[in-house]
Amino acid sequence: MPDPSIPQARTATEVPGEPGPPSGHGISRRALLGTAGATGLVLGATGGAVGYAAAPARATPLTSVGSDRAMFHGKHQPGITEGLQARGHLVAFDLAAGAGRKEAAALLRRWSTTAERLMAGEAAPHDDTDVARDAGPSALTITFGFGHGFFGRTGLEKQRPGALDPLPDFSSDHLDKARSDGDLWVQIGANDALVAFHALRAIQQDAGGAARLRWQMNGFNRTPGATAHPMTARNLMGQLDGTRNPKPADSDFDQRIFVPASGEPAWMANGSYAVVRRIRMLLDDWEKLSVTAQESVIGRRKSNGAPLSGGAETTPMDLEKADAKGEYVVPLNAHARITRPDQNGGAAILRRPFSYHDGFDTDGAPDAGLLFVCWQADPLRGFVPVQRKLDRGDALSQFIRHESSGLFAVPGGAAQGEYVGQRLLEG
Image 1 (cartoon, one colour):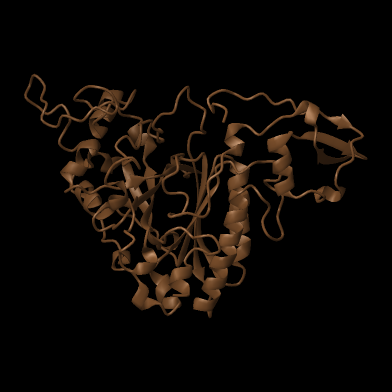
Image 2: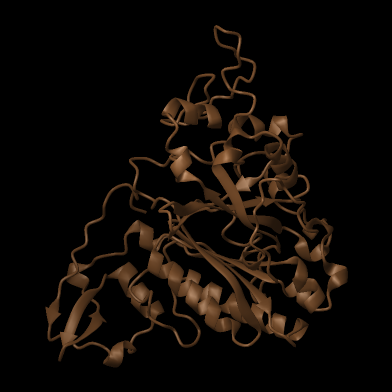
């Protein structure tokens, strides 16, 4: 696979007079991508219509960004352990009035079929919009989860996990109920904005009369290959965000992030719980601080993410180190100190957020911040203790505001021939 940090040359050549498919529908997206991977694509024009044709002599394969593919079927759902994606959509639905378990099962079957095809770089199974016609999979992932209300609407209350009990209230919450919770949650991520939108539109169309949109949010991250080498992403405050994220190579990663195969309820085996929070950053106030003051709030250097106690980004933080005045180098209320697992009884979460920007308020303040998504085997042992600790004295709290919230049970991955949630809905 080409190095994503090295721009790949594109040499597609226009071929006058090359016949193209009528009305742009004569070649499937699957065939189109197969051609792109093997021999490349060239533009052909006939009578002003633009089509596609193979050009073995002038092959232009998809770049690594376009050809990257995540797998739909597997032990876990996609979109949890993959790296951050350049574009994301978070969307919640409520089941329509009168829709129950039967309609929910049919919907999840449709969604799973669509997700499998789109993640493979193929067209949607019906009424494809052609938005992503020219692109490869672009690392597209589509992830599905169930909210607290889903189980009552489908008559499956006895199957509702205890871990899905509503999150407690926090003092930093200013929650908009209309943009919180939901019966069904879908996370879409890709490294191409059109591929991500195409998936969002297909999922929305598939909902049909079974579910209605509750809320939807759009996010972004740095595009893979935009830096000279892979590195921890930065958020809109300019800070490296995710330095201490658990890694799949950690011996206790699965234990912390995924429900065990022997766990309860059985349908959640190999699944995880997603906490979703829209966290507004008060950037006008934050940007008035000096860099030194910002670093004291976070507890890390802004330039490279190194702890204020010294070293590089991944150097363990020395919480006992003091300066010449006897004061802690890493302040007691520094965000990085408070969120350390060893300061929270070992509580750990896998952060996988997107940044967002939704315009400006009437006073010119940016409506921007973080679409915070974190994963854990049990939110009562993951997100909740960490957030409670932050609630009691995090220096960052005066520069952020939690504006919406959701908690979703995300079942394990679908096996070949299954749809997501089948073990719940047909068990």
